[in-house]
Image (cartoon, rainbow, N blue to C red; front, top):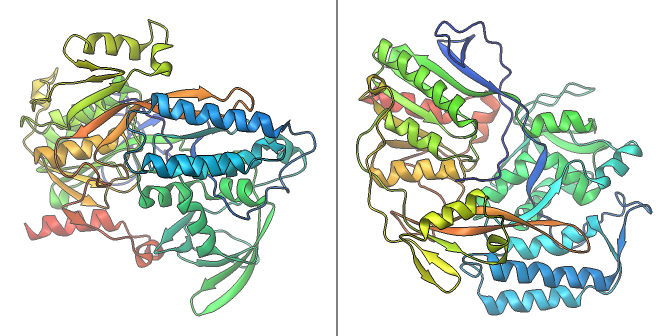
Length: 508
């Protein structure tokens, strides 16, 4: 299903040619196929700020638009109305009386003019409490606020981080007066405990559960430090390095360098063969460019068939979603077993949906669904979905009866999460890693609503999916072989999930 996604950086592409004459290529390493894609549009999705004392005065400018208290209250009214009138199950995880009381308090607290940057602190903690990762404010990286900050010489915190058990660690090597290494713990950031900063950000992040909030904060850490605290130019760190605590001043980087760390350019798909275990590991980092990615999958299975590979793993640990047809197409190469991902779907035919032009894909889908779905007021409910066998492959010779393994993490979200649901509900293979990042009963088919005065954009889902297996209120498809996050793996540069898979195969 369509979903707004972010991706993490991937190793750079150093391919050396394509002996199969397909849209992929071999790269250094043991029999590796790779596919490239262009840099995605640099929008920050899932941006949330917390209430409290964090000051943004450093990043505001007297040239920034100032909205009256009346305009802000009016936009708050519009926002809550849009949520109530369009979201398919708004109060599933936050009772309506509690949400109404929180909104009344939020609205009553607006008594002075506000700038856009301060509005995120007002709005996002409220939205986050609905605990739906498909409901959030969308902030453009090309916003005037960033332009003003950069015009005054503003830069951004350069390090990628990993947050494990509430503690913050560097994921990067950073040379300087004192070199930082992966696994070095950040104890303080500009005098504040790093753990408390991480907790504040995670608690206020819009997500289905705290683990997906955690990985979102990790991936956007440098940007959010600027937006929350105005930090980035020269950040003072107290770092635990072995038995010593060292103070390091980290210079900021440009927007381009920051975006290169947030959004991934280059390799989207790759395959590695590990002949010692008759294993092929296929990585797909985003479900995009459907026809190109399907061609890549076909090219992988030509090699798998030719080499007689007995074990195939699909790595979705960095995949935040896209078009779920890609996951279904991959499964069709390995299984003929009927399966179901969801047992039912419901549309909310709210004002945002009914205002869409007739030619919009969503309206066309709804018109088609109206032939078999049941109408109840604003809702359109599907009948129970039956399990279905994977669609036949165009080239049936590419079906291989190899054993199937799926690598997941909390980043595995939206349509990638649905692939994990398919594997779990259908018993199609073995899942290894961490739970996925989305609730089993999930929302989707997102639309944008622009607030009239401030022009902030809120993303709201129009559909609800009920899971085919498990407890729908639970967050995350649970792995069959859990692999906890460990700082020792980060320090050693060890791929713990892949090692767990290899160990599993050795025992068989």
